[in-house]
Length: 403
Image (cartoon, rainbow, N blue to C red; front, side, top):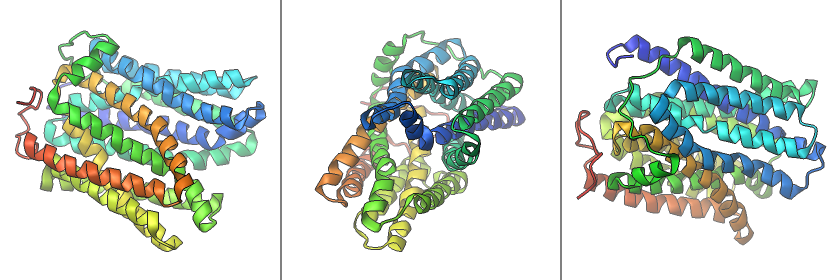
């Protein structure tokens, strides 16, 4: 598929967005119901916590492998493998006779969730530099829609039994796999560096321009995990908000993020460039979380979540776009494998940080995350200035090591 064929690119992006959306809907279907699966199998609270962590741990291990293998053998086979493997994981969960099989299902789902770096690499393959922030914004919007739609669909399907949502998630995965198999072309083959998964980690790190961006990625997603995993408990303890109301708030915040990535990211990157848009988003998110940490009422709390969602919606795709320009084309899959691993690590670190720090005060989780984001924003301003991200023409690259 040539870059000059806009219809082919549009078709490919539509299929990629559907794959991400289906993957995240499945994730959103299962996550609210996972404690009930565990309880049905006699799991303790610790074991239920390990069920949540097992998904991210599998992603941490397998994401670099998916990225490097897609660099070597092509994007489409590993996208299909991820969708079909995810469907198998959901079927195992639906039929699981014991807690051990639920763990197997979660580990398989987490491993197959490593297809996300393949999707990101595909986007980098088919879009020019100036288009990538918008493309990654669309991928981020699909994430947000999946997180909104998944819990709603899961609650609806659970009326017919606890295993029905898992069957529904499996069916969605198979439908997306069928569409991708029929309609998704393989992007232009890049000259592969033919690295193993762990060699790709070292190779990506060898490009000095990308190192700070990888650190930003880990820290940003750790702050996001502080917010995402501590949100429900924080709302309940501070304001007495129950499960149903929290769901409405989460849906509202998710929709703000989706609208940001669909409509605002493209405009900002054309106006400011990826670099300025990135650190601006980080500062806006820091202001939102900092305000949410200290405001005394529910309306003000929700109001503060709006800039937090907008800032995150801007920062994520622009950071991905900058990273795509910091390594050569042959390492795009490896790069996004590394970033997916870092994000999985962040989803292990963030809950420990957020929930552990709540013992020192209910304002500490969001407040400490806001301070970390503010410090990262300062570092990002310096980085953008040094690397001249804002002045590089689309044909230029940041793939050479910095001075």
